[in-house]
Amino acid sequence: LESVDVLEGISPCGTILINTPDSAESIKGKLKADDVKIYTVDATKIAMETTGKPFPNTPMLGALAKATGIIGKEGLIKEIKHKFLVKLGEKLTEANIQALNRAYEEVKGTNG
Image 1 (cartoon, rainbow, N blue to C red):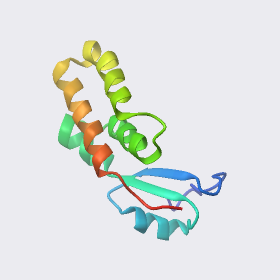
Image 2: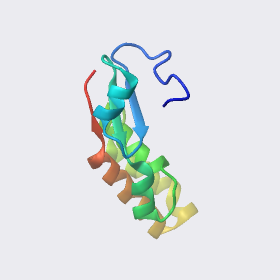
Image 3: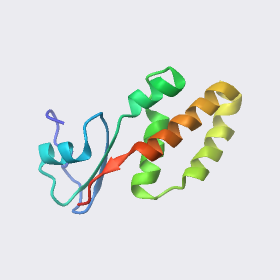
């Protein structure tokens, strides 16, 4: 967050989702982003605890679904099952679904 301007080009009342253990309020203060919605989730920690791998992609999808509402959680779960079952097997697919659900519940945010 210190090396690039993550707010560059974002419209007023925009939304930012960050993979961090820091709180949304803390990030909002660092960025001085009064009119932007900030959401945070520790997706890497969730991934490690659920899948045993440091891949935060699926938890970030769960957090994005909750933070923005642009896609439903159930639709994501259906797609994960469809795409992952053959490729990863049942155990890792279920772990990814658990990661998605945890991030959906654990994401925290501020209003712009």
